[in-house]
Amino acid sequence: MRIAVVGATGRTGKHVVTQALARGHHVTALARQPARLALRHQNLVSVAADVLDGDSVLHVLPGADAVVSTLGVGASREPTVLYSVGISNILKAMRANGICTVAVVSAAPVAPRSERTFLERRVLMPVLERLFGATYEDMRRMEALLDASPVDWVSLRPPRIVNRPATGSYRVAVSGRLARPRSITYGDLATALLDALDRRDLHGRPALVAN
Image (cartoon, rainbow, N blue to C red):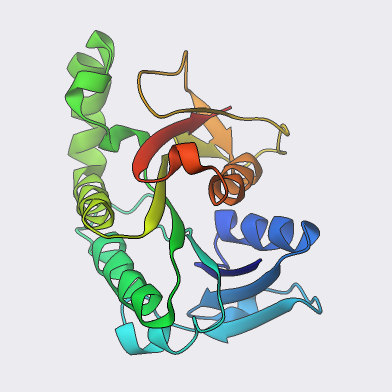
């Protein structure tokens, strides 16, 4: 498979690139500063692209079979349109190039109130929304754009992402809840994103993912 990885120099993106190459895929790594990706491989092409610039994305996706977006703003509390404008430009480029599958990273707090426990609704979410509400709102806009599109999409909603060695396993739930979804490693999230490209049961819906 030929996979375009958006945000390839980020913590999750680097794992996606490395794992995709290990699986035998051909990878196009998209980043504003592709030189930050030190990896070299015969099946890897690194290109400069700004996801907020639709033209730059449009011209680097030809030949891809699927897209994995690992875009993120980290712990920023500032309003953002990275997720919504980014996915809008990605979807336009996908349509122009006949690409039908995309997997993206969202966040567990994006889920509706009905999917939360009493403690989460009353204690945890008010704090998170006060700190990172602008990011979550843009992620919700991203998921709405995906839901309105005809592509096969998957939006993975991790809880806290931790910089620890990958465990080699993860749990995923499309409906209902996962027991104690406390965190997931960057490496395991990357594995879940790549696996999701071929999981028809996950297409067209968001899914909670955790270790």
